[in-house]
Amino acid sequence: MQAAKAPLDCGNSGSTLRMLAGVLAGRNLHTILTGDNSLRARPMGRVIDPLRLMGARMDARDGKPPITISGTSELRAINYSLPVASAQVKSCLLLAGLLAHGRTEVSEPLGATRDHTERMMQWFGIPLETEVTSDVTAGPSLGVVGPLSFAARDVSIPGDISSAAFLIAAAALLPRSDVVIEDVGLNPTRTQFLSTLRSLGLAFDVTSEREECNEPIGTLRVTGATQTAPEARPVIVGGAAIAQLIDELPLLAVVGSQIDGGIEICEASELRLKESDRISATVKNLRAMGAMVEETADGMLVGGPTQLHGAAIDSYGDHRIAMAFSIAALLASGESEIEGAECVSVSFPEFFDLLESIVER
Image (cartoon, rainbow, N blue to C red; front, side, top):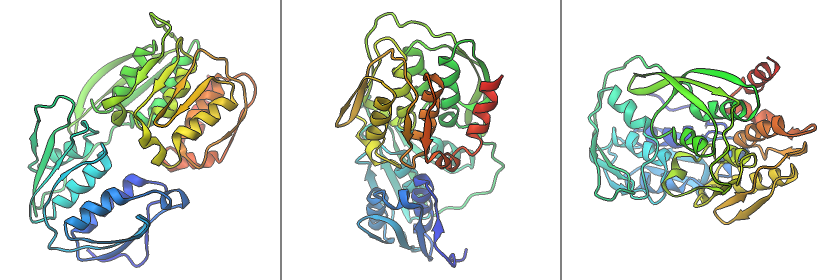
């Protein structure tokens, strides 16, 4: 492996930067990781600090990218308890642990996070030690002993349910819709979104469930047959569910504006540290469209149902905000204009073409 001749540009992807940091920490290479304006404004201390404990040299101004990594083949194993529930930090440290000397253990006292990395490691035959604690609210402790090597394998990647979520919500909320999404990932740590939709009274069916490359997948059929909730009260989303819904929360706020009783999102202060302050961005845009919204320190209370109206929407350069309010625009009366909608190309380049093709049918 050779050092890159120029900084590695991670674009808008915090996941890319964090996981690459874990891989590079155990290599005798000098590497700079950077990104776009949004990524360079995001704090990365959550990976910098534990990787320093493992022996990697990590240099960054105010803990933000660009990050200069001077890795080492003498990376040390550590036992690390995640101070915030984060699948990205967990994955970073497990990847670093593959190159470290000894047993690296990562525990999740604040609840289980998405487990794609663990499943992928198991698919590649990497011995991964899992210990479930007696605390039912905590996630498992995960251990990997390094340094180790493993053989390449073919991998089939399922459709991303966090991307499909926008099409699912649109189909569920628009009358006479009927949309089928095949080969979508149904990992149990990702399907909290579907469970929440059901609690909001939205209808869908799951068929053809199976496993490929250690990941569960299936087919979703979504129809515009909204069911009225038994009581007009807000559905509360908080606690351990937040870590498994973090990417879908702005969309769920939009959905909540259409449901009897609305939705309350709490214990989600992590949203303020994403590509934008997603709490503030969601609240401001929903208010611009006529929704009843109360902002809190760690979430929001969205009243519903509300007939949204078209408005000028600010994406704040955040792909998830732009996509969430594209769905809101479909539900609204009148025209909406989304400033900075091109940021959607970061995660879902075909989003607008696909959405247009579905709506036109």
